[in-house]
Image (cartoon, rainbow, N blue to C red):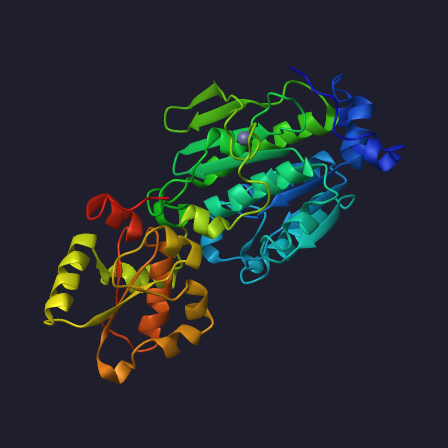
Length: 402
Ligand SMILES: [Zn+2]
């Protein structure tokens, strides 16, 4: 299925531009009209890393008139194995600036706009607004879901790609372009459990895989901008570099999708870190040797009742959650109070030697508060793996779950 071009053509190409783009101009499907559309196009590339590097280089070379770059990181030596838009002299330089300089060298007719702040719920709409198309080169699930939702609310089509070791995937999500066009949530309604899918930093990635997937993304971007060919809307490209195999699967729009379905539950931006269970490095470190199971907690509570053990059990969820279910004998101090420091006044003093035990819904938030409490000197503090969800499942099924 073909789609109308996303962009109107620019008035004209200069003589220099005609010379520069001549190999495009003589392709009948592109021609003057297609090249003028690229000149008028505004494309935002999220990340100037593994996928963003080849994507930016080829979008710039192709003559996309305005390129936005959303990137807050700086160039590290370990990036150079695949992030080919950066060089040795760019190490420690902001990636956005380094990418901008490389683009100027390849095509001085491209207007580059840098967005050097970390994308979050507060700025994502402002950054996205005004772009015709987004190319997503992010490497984490929290940002991916945020990009999907924000692009959906603003009705901006986007080209998604992901890479890991020798495997890559790509698709175009554009619910605004067709009634049956799916979004990212239709394909992946839920993020993988935290820790299940290692990042490229943990698991590695073949450098040239970035070029394979990044070039698919640019290919699709050009098709969408100029209205040529058949974009992979409703299709998932899967690439296996070891077998050298491309597969194309159909992705259907999910009528029950939380975002683009018939009765959406996601009607605005949500807490993506929480949704994806992303925990900080500090939280992971704190929890590493200080996580107890719900059966250990049950045993500890019995001992506390018998007077052979003393500790304080803290629920760090929100009051509405505490009303639904709880571990008996707990006190409620929401996570926010740990982050602003006020929770520490409500805990027994460090010198009292009383152990602090914390839990939340699944163990993500309590890992974070554990890091705070340990940092404040409570060396023997622990948190409960699996949280109240595990408590209800394994210890007390008479309580409601949520
Ligand atoms: Zn959807």
